[in-house]
Amino acid sequence: MQIAVIDLGIGNLRSVEQALNAVAPNSNVLVTSDAETIDQADRVVMPGQGAVGTWFNALSERGLEQAVRNSLDSKPMLGICVGMQALFDHCEEDGGVDGLELFAGEVRHFSNFHQQGATASRLKIPQMGWNQVSQRQDHALWQGIDDQSHFYFVHSFCANLKLNAEQDCVYGEADYGHPFIAAVGRDNVFAVQFHPEKSHNDGLQLLKNFTQWNGE
Image: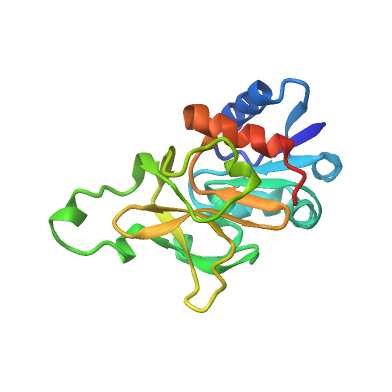
C-alpha cells in the first residue's frame, strides 16, 4: 500500500511520515509534491500548518490542485489542521480565501466568537495544547478511541458550518470559548483540526485506523 503525504512545504511533514511508518510499517509512505505520485497512491494525507493563503499559494505553485481534487473524489483521504480548513467554502484569513468547497461552512478567527470577560481573557489565541474531542457520531477512524479523548491543537482559526447546512458531516467537536468543528467527513474523506501525529496513543490509533479504512 502506498500512502502519499502531500508536501506543500508547510506543516509537520516528517512527523506525519514517521507516525504513519510506525502504525503501518509495511506501507510505502511518500512525502511528495509530485501530482502523478499522489494520483497513483492508495491513500492520501493532506497536512498543513500556518496561514491558509500560503497553503493555497503553494498548492497552485506546485500544480497540485487537480491531484487533490482527484483524491477527494476517489480514495481514502485524511486532512490535518489547515488541510481540514481548506475543505470548507471560505476562510477569512489572509483577507479571505476561497476553499475547496467540500463542506458548507466558513473558517473564522477565534476572536469572532470569544465574549469579553474573565473567561475570554484566559483563552489565549492561538489555542495551543490539549483539548477534549466529543465524537458526534461513529466513524471507522474513531475505532479504539474513547469519546472525550484529548488531542493536540495548534490554531487561531476554527471551522463552523453554515446555519442551514446539514450537520451529518460533523464527526467531532471541541470547545474553546465556543464549540467548533474538530473532525469532519464525507464519503472517502475525513479531516481533523487537531494534529494526530502529536497526539500520542489516540492520535496514532486514528492514523492506524486511516491506513486500514477503505473509504466507506
